[in-house]
Length: 403
Image (cartoon, rainbow, N blue to C red; front, side, top):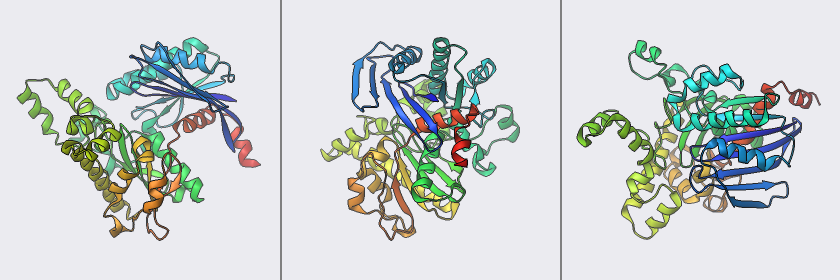
């Protein structure tokens, strides 16, 4: 069974074609990325040989990018099903769901909650349905679903209950596939049953979030009603005083939409540094004496450390802190700064291990650390593909569990 996993970002489309033979593992027979969708798009594609090919392409939107992805994998294998990551499932979608016209309509009705991400996914779904026809089943796998287990004390906002109910206002959480991927890989690596896993997982990239996982379930997470809440990010502010929106709108003579756009696209690392949203650029600028870049990096690490401490407090400790995402997996100095001064709770890194781990899975804490620290590269594609197979009733996993 060959399953194409599709993961749309605001300006990217990632895709992986998996061949499943049994429940013990899947084989990647093609994977790629269409970057900078809409402007100077580039296709990166690799097949089983591992050689990566780059070429400029015309991808003005995600529908065009989806058609390019389908063309890129057509000779690698036969597509038996497609799994699509959809960022926001609201309260309706808490499990992977077969896509039909009714499901599409409901996802479209949720677009106001995450327009930067649900719209690209919808475009890719429509394009793939048109290209492949009705005989190829498709499944939506929702980022918010992992956080459906949040207890009310963590999911509710302290606003009038009737108002929250009327407008479906709650903390939904995001990056669910990434946090689940880190959790499942940690459990497999350490031979820990999922129902005994207790972690703080950190998805640190252009978008950032932290999640508290107890007994294999998300019990708190930093993103809320939208992906703007929580940690400082590449261009998002993260936590702010809500009154700041009205204050800035009045003082700047702007409307609320303008202020929200500023908080989402011109804040965070970019806004504080005035230079870049890329952590690599800021670390280089800091080394060259740029004080605003240094402040941006310091604020970023401080806020992550604050969330780690908060989640250790609400869970009464954890087995490990897990780093994932582009920054979490590839920037040892940021991991070092986040964990600095946390020996009080038993979280101590091994300096040599931490410095040597870039983009690979490894433990980076000291052997005697009471709370371990790991780097675990996020693999959302595998989660999407496996959920798609299970949702479609594949007997692969049942067979694997019986052997």
